[in-house]
Length: 391
Image (cartoon, rainbow, N blue to C red):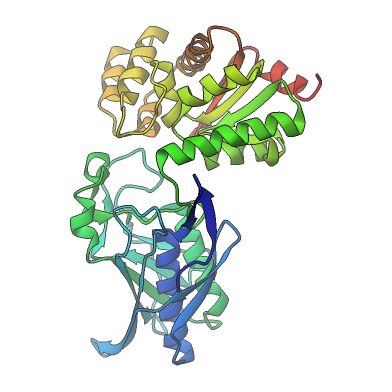
């Protein structure tokens, strides 16, 4: 069943879709429901992290035995809405078998286990395997990101009978071919695609339409709050940090995606005087090198920028070499021994942004990472945040 929610872009009605994470959660839950409830069902309902409920069509059901053990295998077709990507319309399968009495669920290094140790989640055919450090998933694990893992466990735990233990395996046969056409091999994710999605929902939008919508939102924030300061972040992780750590009203936060230069230009034209910029180092480090469109397809000099600033800070040349050879910024950060490196990078991000707006807007910056938490604040960051809203 298609998601019956729409947005309007440039006068065109465009439909939302759902992520590989939501698709996988639906397949897993439907297989568990059929296994234990023995119901003849054609749809399955899940909650998404965004707060929207999805009622997903079950595409196929297979019930059988293997090695004298019953299994149920179901599938759901992923729907990317009106802005589909490479994973649109792929079929995702989930196979459930019961862990029999006397068996224990163990962490084998290639699976995920819920807190109750009642569910083992595995990646099968077409689910990429992580082979390099620096990603959100440990080496050896299936490339199923933390939010989809939590969603899958949450949905299964709703219906899993008490004292039952199960093993669930996700298979994406088309993922083997699709994965080779993505950046996954470069990142060290081999054998398939990643199961992703921080909100569970795909918002349909072309790049130009997305930029237009951000510019409109920027104007609306100025009109509604009449602040001389704008708070910006590349994505949902930065927004979460701003809300949870800095207690910023989420309604006043503008998510800018990859369009740093475009947004800075618009901020200047609209007459803002100050910018509070918070974000994950993987995006913002590019700005430290003067890169203002941060999508990996446009530019990727993260390791070189991190390595150059580490050397400038006085890091050991051998560690700098390790940084430059790193797979991700998270891995590169693990080789840093001097806090000064992160401080230099934050100040350079500030300088590059202020230069972009011809020093007509003051910018203060905070960077963070998943593994290391907050990395650095520019010298005037606390003062700007404390004065926010006190025009």
